[in-house]
Length: 100
Image (cartoon, rainbow, N blue to C red; front, side, top):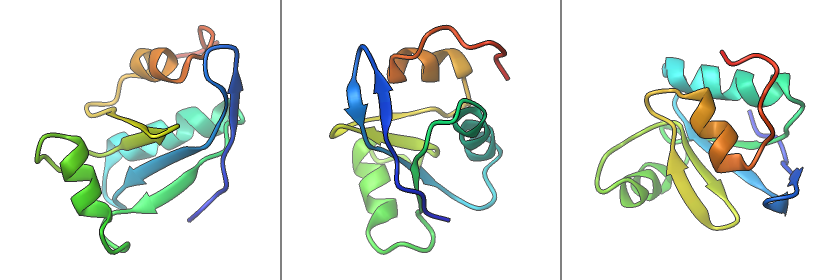
């Protein structure tokens, strides 16, 4: 699954969001649901199917294969374990209606 993504918030302006995932990861599922529920588009990169993606994730996370890993405006962060408050903070979103 791949979606083109933009996020517009006062803090980050208009951004492209790329989320590195695996098909079996429950934290990835939750993070994608968080974005979808808020109407935030994103590009998903499955690290098991995309050449070089696992290496990118490991280089961004001190050698660990942590997913989901987000890339926004060239900045990376992971959300493993899933933490909706961290996503709100890292993406510069207002307080969400429901945190799941």
